Amino acid sequence: MAPKATILVVDDEPHVVRLVQANLQASGYQVLTANDGRVALRAVEDSQPDLVILDLMMPDLDGYEVCRRIREYSDVPIIVLTARGAEIDKITCLDAGADDYLTKPFSVRELLARVRAVLRRSRFPEEIRNHPPFRSGRLAIDFGRRQVTVDGRPVELSSTEYRLLAALARNADRVMLHEELLREVWGPEYRDEKEYLRLYIHYLRQKLEADPSHPELILTHQGAGYRLAILPAAGV
Image 1: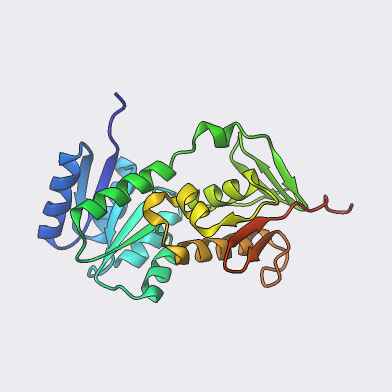
Image 2: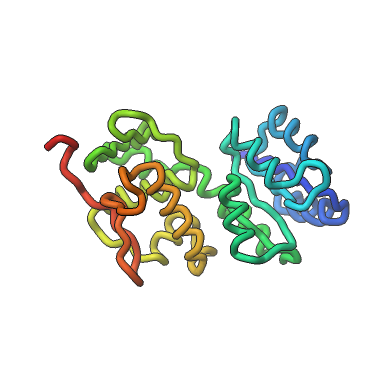
């Protein structure tokens, strides 16, 4: 049996750390803990965990800054925990580099479901790696090497961005429904989280489109979903 993932839990509230640690260990995960942002950054560098569960509201170095610093050198999945539930706070977390967001107080069952989902989508299944190379206009995807280029220049994508682009490319020129994309990229637990989808479509357009405000590659079908258009090769 493959070893369970190692998870770093970062929170300045000891009772939260104990609660999360106990339930993760009961589910078979290896758990590391940190009570502030600086200790967390050292733990990520030294121990290279498979997932970070990160509280946002910490003294000295808050979760937003920890997230940004981790993203400078690592694509380890990050779930943030916060008492703030407004959509703007969720977007700020995702902009900082988080993969998911959970509002306090949270249920243990929901936390464990999110952990499983984030770990699941951080791994790339064989059907993605073995898919033939894809090209549309200026965009090219080499699935075997997990490499995306625009006009021949490499484009850095996060794990979630890449999975979303891969889902669209594997279904190119077909409208993929919101719920279909959420289920395939994020998992069945996220079928109602359309703001995740809107935000990551925005991220992809910023990186792939010549004019993100007038996209030609990733097209919106209002009220339904999104379609990756097949465009002629550049210069043709």
